[in-house]
Image (cartoon, rainbow, N blue to C red; front, top):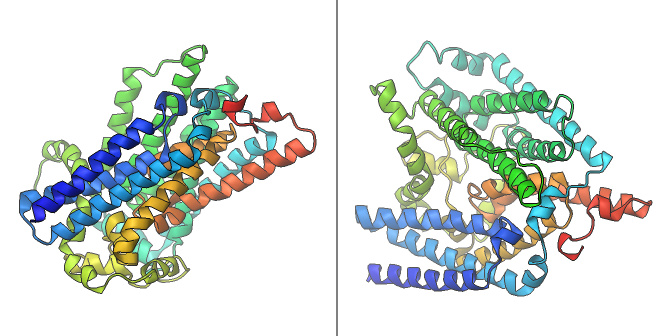
Length: 459
């Protein structure tokens, strides 16, 4: 009976996916569509939960499997609704011209450099307060002298505030969200002004500061997404320029291989420092396990953890929005109270300082029940589509940076509520800022065409 339910749910998904592809956009024309990455994230979760159910024959997994596929069905339906409502307008965009036709106001350009300076200062202040803290600083100093997972202990102390408040949520907005957006915007500005003075030096310095701050915080996945977003943004800039007849600056195999190597290197080093590598394994075995570990993290980690703790959260949900309100309260300054993700981490054998968050289907069900599963992913898809349309409405380097960042951020955002905290809120502020700047320029005699205020497709 359970297998029949799964097959039925997957069949509905396939039918909706075929309809979505049939009426969808030509990606060569419109470029990356943000809801696609949101759908891909749910698909990974659904495939992971289904794999665990079928391979391990875990009876606890069936509810999570159904939640996953129904959430995916709802999300695909939401994307279809967006196309029906706004598709004719969205199809007018020429993404290649959008990327290669940036018109940067002096205020926006200054905002990029100012934003990078502030973000770097926040990261430096964060590192200073971490290393100057007696307890946390000692944990870092012992990493090279002890076989214990000192970095993992330091990370727990930083996020929980047990040894002092390090403003992890505030720092995250600059370190993980704004720095990649501003760096991509800097690349876009440089693509229009060859030979910008000190461009490479600024770029490299900011990247090194950001990676160091991320490594100290022990955020493996954020480093991977950070490097990927920079690489993909550069690829888009080069590709769009070539297609519009600009001189092609090659993105050779060397650049691709170097990017892959850096991603795996940072992920592998942090895996070892966090104590996640198997004890006793040689350096070669640890290196060979990096890719399988990364794939396991992408496909199976979240559903596996949620299945283990289902006997707890499945009996106390739905909370009718209270769980999301509790998450919101956790961003207040001070020692963070033990939240649901901390409790779930403890239940599966970890400490209360660790995190084991619910994936999007489970999180939506826990907050709003089956009605939420049917409605929330649908509404979320429409909102993301509108969000994407806003980012294409003006050919701004900041909008391009925000779009490239959100492509990868959506793969890690566990819930619509988390969208506000893990990138969406910061991007929303940038949308308002650029809109006000462009409107002011036009109002006081700015060149509308140069500033890119008009929709690209209507030019």
